[in-house]
Image (cartoon, rainbow, N blue to C red; front, side, top):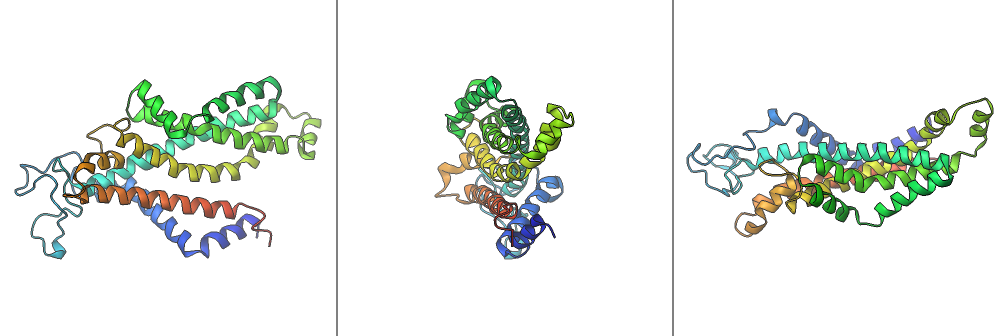
Length: 294
């Protein structure tokens, strides 16, 4: 059994909290993929005037608890839309945009770090100074600035989070390249005539995977929080799209009278980010050879 297999068994299969987090994340992914089949109503359609007695901000109505009205597990928002369906579809946006932004940031940052670390000299100086400039700004502040300049919307939110995240992956990839490019097996590859691209992408890049995968897992939770924050400020996903941060923004002024409007999207954000962070920590332990050497 390899160190990775032992670490995976020890840190994932033997820890109930990590297993529970993994199951929660799998359920969220399942919900996001099959949202049209799971949701009970159209997330964009108002129930006002369609079903009698459905007023804005109506509390949850569950038949099994004695409610004789139609099924609204999480109640209605201020526009008479079913909150359950909107939370379900919100998982699609948060997980989809968050994953896409981290993938773009990982690809861009990993390529930049590989080229910078292997080439060295002025190429390294130019690329790293650019990443230093980006790192000088707080991640969320940089994303807010980008969206403010180029306008809100799905594509700009994705690009903003990718831009704010990619320096972390560039730094990680560069550090791995610097630690491995002068090792014996890399020198042997040069001696037999391997070109720079083969050395970078075949010999060195696989060594960057464990560190970058862990960072990407943890970065996904941060990206989901950034998406929610941008939408909460009105700079992210625009209405009437169902997005958790936007739902919090719409109901924040009615927390005392209709707390269910903000409770359910808030719980969805908390569970998602917490599950991702716990999995990321478990994955980090599983990939750390110092913890799996026995």
